[in-house]
Image (cartoon, rainbow, N blue to C red):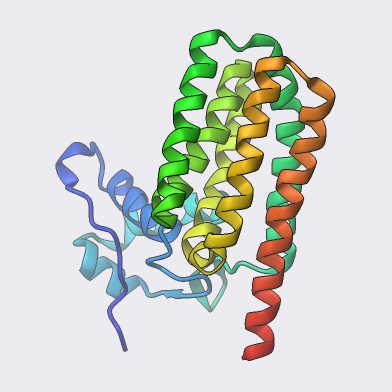
Length: 231
């Protein structure tokens, strides 16, 4: 039985043990160090994290509320699985959120904000050229969140952040397998999004929000189906 792989963080920056355990487990799940469906054994986690069961249970309940952990009576806790239906939901949510975000951001963005987005896209170009899928994924998250933040809409920003957290986990687990083709295609779409934000082309931005998310969804669906067939 292998030891669970968790991403340890220096504990001194945390006020409570629960916060520390929560951040360690959340980071490990989002980074796919703890795999979808993996059982979270309390005794082993307590030993690895140097904590008692009480803060561990509290942290797991918080992660359950975020959809990252499933807790079943008599069975215990496990990392939430990633099914095709869940992937579909992630991109449906992003599409809905971004149709609003792109429209509002186009009307509110300053030249400085658009310049920062341009710089992000340029860094993404560099990551794509060297096939650094992990860096590209991090920058991709920053790109989409930055546009949401320009809107100034607190709920939209929060829901976008939470949905992108689910996408981060998805990308950590699977993106390396589809990265080469999807990065090139996505970068062309990102450049077009930036251009239309600058031009305040609201109709084209709405169509791109649909296209961008549905093409990404299709790539992940095809990968998951192919893995299920190979199993």
